[in-house]
Image (tube, rainbow, N blue to C red; front, side, top):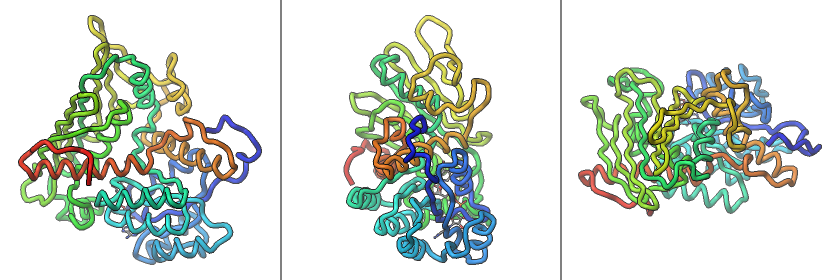
Length: 393
Ligand SMILES: NC(=O)c1ccc[n+]([C@@H]2O[C@H](COP(=O)([O-])OP(=O)(O)OC[C@H]3O[C@@H](n4cnc5c(N)ncnc54)[C@H](O)[C@@H]3O)[C@@H](O)[C@H]2O)c1
């Protein structure tokens, strides 16, 4: 983290390349703005869109040098690998089906990788990426960026410190409505590939938002599911993939869980909420009010803990940027994910040991678990909502 001021850490920041994130793309610009927030990495190369003109236009808008605009991910990996001033890492922000070959190409050329979720279509592909990263000694981040909110880190620290006592139940929901009608039949950029099984995988909404819920529950509680039962369905008639799922879970230690997630939940924006119930207290966090955490104890009113107002755990404080009452939001949580990733990489390059705060970003294991979550839910649903073990291929 940036409290360290040794000369090795004050050199020019890292450089990165981007694959995806062309005109009209959603998450590419979020990655770029988040990375710009702390000035730790400079965009230096890119293959932003398959259409050459659109790729070039994006690159020029973003001040990417002409000789570092590429016409395929493979070309970018090959040519960057030959340069003395090669990029330090690549950010992959394309539709899901090409995450695997693109990440693989960059890992094989020795680049660190950050990829958006869901990491791959198949579990074995995600495991292959983990093996490649391990084999080449490379870092791999997966942008389950909701972990980056300071009050999520506060919740995790409270659970770890035993403030809730033994955990009993995890209840999560993620409600959006942007797929409340068949947007996939229009020219809508994001809906088109998300509801095409070839480009999104075995499930749509489960991968798009279910993986975030699964990741958040595990991040806050430290627990992994042991088995689950799911009903995966489309509320909107005619839709070929899911827009809704209901999932019952059993976690390590016998803790129970229940998730509901939908992108056809009319009237909901980005309603990601998690409640964790313990024997002594419960906590509740909502993405749409991310600077607060609600604590409930028996026999008294609930308490609202606001970011930076009163003591917080150091793990949360280190990622809190402004005084209380100055809202931090989506960009800051993404920026925190990148701050951790880049701080770790900068220290590794300088031959220094990253600290626990530096290492606090979701890695390839979180990516594998997300892909497994999708497959297990679909497996269960296809068997008439049977219990299925979480582990395995
Ligand atoms: N972490 C999050 O909170 C979050 C939020 C939204 C999306 N995502 C993930 O980010 C990824 C992209 O989603 P999006 O909503 O930005 O999609 P999008 O359709 O808005 O953008 C995708 C971009 O990739 C480009 N592209 C498409 N195929 C390509 C290829 N083969 N090679 C290079 N570029 C290609 C497109 O031109 C476009 O610019 C998905 O995996 C999605 O699940 C994550």
